[in-house]
Image (cartoon, rainbow, N blue to C red):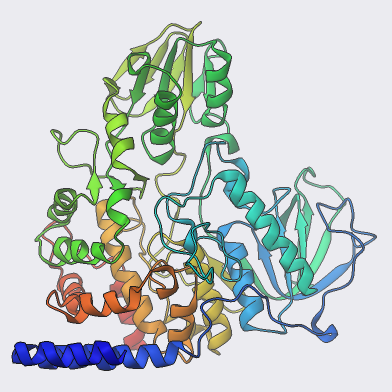
Length: 568
């Protein structure tokens, strides 16, 4: 640090005009360095607990009601009843246990194991993002570590597979069990609240309505997840499919290719799932001439290669979001910088962005498919014909496999209304993203606020997210709005006692210094050096709040939040 300061003063002598900026950077560096000396890089241990805050004992791990040891029919008590053991639910529970050493939790899920939609994902599915900031705060997932092995490094090549993620969440579940403060029930579903008795009812997932097997829970707060994340294997086909047609969810692609039964493949859908299916077929020896790709609407893809230089992307965001006059120009700027890509640059810019991430090599492979059908959504599949909004596609029934990669809901976050709140009396609703396409970090932040603040109004005042039905559609505007909301959420979090320490010390945030080699030094140079990216937030806030994009006539729901703050 002394060497850095001496060099800073030397540079200032060469360029006196840089003195103020340089000194500010050096002072900030010293403050951050001194502070972080007292902060562990990350903890792999859950907090200690005592017998006074343990849950009722059991002999075996609980799945469904098969091993309740007489608990069925009883009324259990806990501080938090968490419905859903997916990414958000597991992250919330983990942070609650860390931030509140006396909290008790009952965790329930329809699946027979933790992991949410990963339980049903296709076998070749991987994370979009680096593993280093996915999952829960107390347990690392990434494989690429600092030399001293203290924490995970940000690397876009380090992306966990489905099986690795399910193993990870099983390990997290075992750690929950070990605290004695969590009880997990899998293969069950939440049925509702008996308001007169104040008892929540849990029933087996397989039980038909009217069944008599149930579990009662009294809790301080009910925690649910508001989203509509589904994968094709979790549902029936979205359209009528003639029984003579070989129509399968994307999960069955590997076994179908291996069987050699099919000469031709028709892939329906072009989000991340559809893109993965196309790349899988090409990588496993299926010629592009035997693949037909049905695309209802073209989408933007984020390019993984550009994301490797994480801090370098800040300049791309600043240039695209602050120095253009429309959201369309913003995304075209991203495309020029290599941050975004699309299948056919000769077509008008896509109006859809669902946050799929692919590599340049994968995008080139996808572009190699010549038979692309752009005639709207699939409306039905008849014998030998796919019926579309604006046309049809003929195929040979006997030797063609139709692969379902279609999305059931336009957005994973449905009906986030203008007056939606995360914290309510006796209830917490996870789901809205306060961190950029990051359910792990968003849920962890909610749990921290639950423990750090006393009243719901204060907690909700720190949670900024895109709201309003029109604002929540998966468009380029949504991505810009989410970036703005995350910046506002971070600004609010930093004003909460302990919020800054939590933010910088949390592995579930991509920008955490622990994930980047010499990240803090380079970050400070980027912020206060010649590029002066420290002004990004101010420029971006001004752009959003002045409605500075010609193709956007709203502020992504921030108007509602501001009006609530004024009333308060």
